[in-house]
Amino acid sequence: MNKTLKLGAALGVALGLAAVSTSISAHDGATGVVKERMGSMANLGSAMKGIKANLQASTKEQNEGLLLAATMIMEHSGGNLNKLFPKGSTDAPSRALPSIWENKAQFDAISNRLNDASLALALNASKALGKDASGLREGLIGERGEIISSLSDQAVPVIFKTIAGTCGACHQTYRAPK
Amino acid sequence: MIRLTKWRAIWLVVILTIVANVALYLFTSPVSVSRDFSQLKGDADHGNYLLRLGGCVACHTDVAKQGAFLAGGAPIKTPFGSFYAPNISSDQTHGLGSWTLEQFVSAMSDGRSPSKEAYYPVFPYAFYRSMTDQDLLDLWTALQAVPPSQEPNKPHEIAFPFYIRTAMKPWQKLFLKTEAFKASSDKSDEWNRGDYIVNGPGHCGACHTPRNLMGARKTDLSLSGSNSGPGGSAIPSITLGALEKQGWTHYDLIFSFQIGLKPDGDVMGGTMAEVVNESLQHLSEADQAAIATYLLREN
Image 1 (cartoon, rainbow over the protein chains, first blue to last red):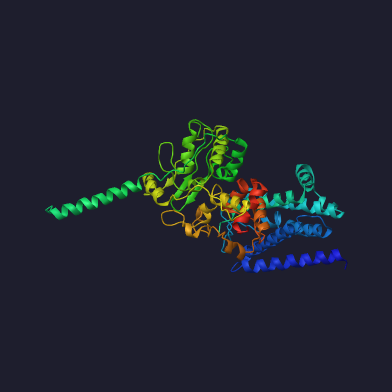
Image 2 (cartoon, each protein chain N blue to C red):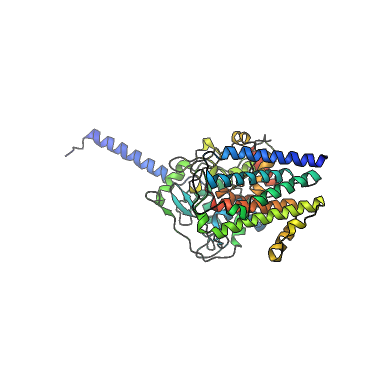
C-alpha cells in the first residue's frame, strides 16, 4: 500500500470512527427512520470536519481527503436524505420541525443543492488529483450541469461555503433549536 | 374614621416624600453619554460595514420573506412577547427619513425615541451606548442613504403589563449602566477591538447573557448562555471556560464566523445562522480575529 492510499485509508477510518462516535452520543433513544437519518447527519458532520481539515487542498493527501468527504456528503444528501423524512416523523429526540412537511418541496430542494455542491467538490478534488471524473459527470446536463461545473472550478473554500450554506439554510428553517 | 393625629400626619408626610422621591428618581432619564460630533465627518462606507457588524441588517430586514433592506424585520420572540424591529430605511413616514442626528443618537445611546418614549431592551441600545461618536455618525450617514421603503411598522405583540411603555423609564434607570468604551491599557489593540465589538455594537451578550425576571441582563454572568433566547431557544455559553471545554480554538471561531461550522462538524442553525449570514461573515478578517482573541482571552 503506497503512502497516499495509507493516508486516505487512515482518514477514512478516522472519519468513520468520528461518525460512529458522534452517532452513538447523539442517538440516545432514537428509533426507526429518526435513528437512521440522525446517523446520516452524523456522517455529514464528520465529512464537514474532513473538509475543514483539508481546506488548503495543497497536497495530494488533502485532495484525497476532500474527495472522500465529498463522496460521503453525496451519499447522505439529495434523494437519499429526503426519503428519510417521511411525513410526521418527529419522534424524540428528533429536532425536525413540522414545517418540513408544510414545504417539503423546498426542503428537498435544499438537500438536492447540498448534493450538487458536494458533487462540485468531488469534481474539484478529482481534477486536482488527475482522476477520471467521467462517472461523476454522468447526467450533468442543462442549467444544473452548468451550475455544478462552474462551482467545481471555484476555490475549495468557496465550494465549502456553498455546502455549509445549504446545511445552514436547512437548520435555520427546519430544525428546532436545542 | 381614622383620626389624623400629629404623629400620623408626620408619618404620612415622610412616606409620601419617600414615594415621591423614589418615583422622581425612577422616572428621571439616565444620564446621557457625553458626545461631540462637531469636528467629525460621517463615512457612509464604514457606516455600511457597521450596519452588518451591529446586526442592524439581521434584525431590521425580513430576509426569509425577502423583505426590503432595513424595512422591518421578522418577529423576535421573547418571554415577554413578539417584538418587530421597525423600518429604519430613509422613508420620511415609516423610516428614519425625518429624524435628526440628535434623535438618532438619543435612540442608539439612551434608548429614547424622538417622542421621548423609552425603547424596550430588545433593541440593544445598552450595547450601542458604548459606540464611539465616529461610529455612530458613520452609521447615521449610511442609514440616510438607504433607499426608502414604505413598509409600515408592525406593532409589537406583547401582553399586559409589558406593553405599558412608561414602565421602561424606571427600567432604564435601574438597568442602563453602560458607559462609553474604554480600552484596557494592558491589553493588545486586537483584544481591545474584540472587547469593543463583543460588548458594544456586536451585542453578543444580548442573547448569550442570561436575563433576570425583568428582562435585564445578569451582567455578573456575562456571556454565560441563556435558556430564554429568541424563540425560546437555549443559547450556549461563550465564556472562555465553556469555549475551552468544547475545544474551540481561535481558528475554529473565525471559521464559524465565516462558514457557520462548529468544531463538531454541525452547522449553526436558528438565530445564530442568521447572525452568521447577515453579520459575522461580512466582517473583516481582522475583526473576526479580534472577536476570537477577546473571547479566548488571548492577549
